[in-house]
Image (cartoon, each protein chain N blue to C red):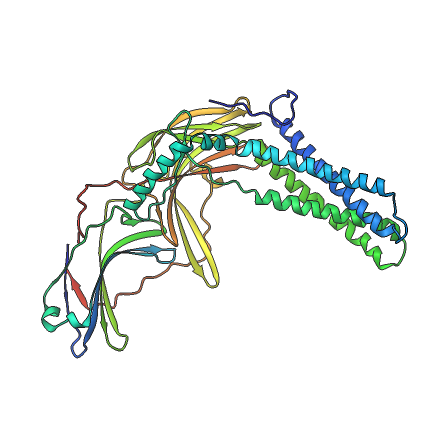
Length: 344
Length: 141
């Protein structure tokens, strides 16, 4: 069941955190070098070229620009490959492979949705060991993208300011303001680079969680089996799986729109300490789930929502805690077919 | 089935009567409403004898949403009768009933100490929406 994930580095390497760091660091350094080279080349050429003569020869200029673009392209490719490989591969593969079964399941869920207004349908994928696989909420890539964009921009600005500051540092020329701004920009660039690498490691170090379920949808008092599949490149301190029922209310407060969430039911389904995971040896385990009797069903209206979900919580030393959310559809128990009229 | 009797205000002509079966959300969030059944009786069909006799509402209820007395969300079902007089005056009466037997699960699981890192609520101010107070002039039984 566990499928081996290939690294884009063909060499065999030990398992653990180091390979992820090495790959991510190398990819980031390539982009960084490319940006610096490109920025410095363009800046120097613009500053010191005359209308009749370039700062450097055309051939050398072209070579530097091509080299910079290649470095940026290669680094970006490695980063995207790394994210793709650890982020979506298994689920995507299964979704594509089981497309036909998924459509049948969707049709069945749509039919049930018509019978159950206000009950949201969270359509699962087909599983590999158990019949269904729950969909994981999308991971937030915006933090990674924004950190990358900010760090690259700041590094580019710093690369432009460095030759300017060196050239005019001792003069009273207004350009010497570069000396003032350069340390600030460098510090900001380092901070965003740190954020970028931290986010990259967080996304790539703890691989995509996957949960399969024996029965779907669920009803109050129903029992089923869950199977957790957790690859990665790290030693987890604690791995915990929770069943949560959460109320979510959105309301206006002045000119703001606020949302309050409250967990009204929380049950720990599984917990294990000291879990070693790797792409070649992912962690797998089965455990039971029971929806409480008389529990409220999933509910969604414009401003209010009752949501059942499973949260996989992974904690590792010196890493930020990672929460992955899998939404569940809990349907109401149909008491009888001839539903009562208004019971006053 | 629900039965109700109207008591019209003397001296005012009833322009229309609306009867509906609705679910309404209460609690922290803005109010949502779902109309399951709706019936409007226009002025032409209203007569003094019609106002005096009992009226019945009958509808097959859906499977969801069930009545729910949650912590920050409550779902309640009611039969709502609204009487329209002239000059934008209207009176209404809600009569609540319970659909289903759902309730908040009575346990919060185990190991509360571990919950602090889970996604949890952010309470920012008191934004409880209030339903309109009944401006009633109808009896329901």
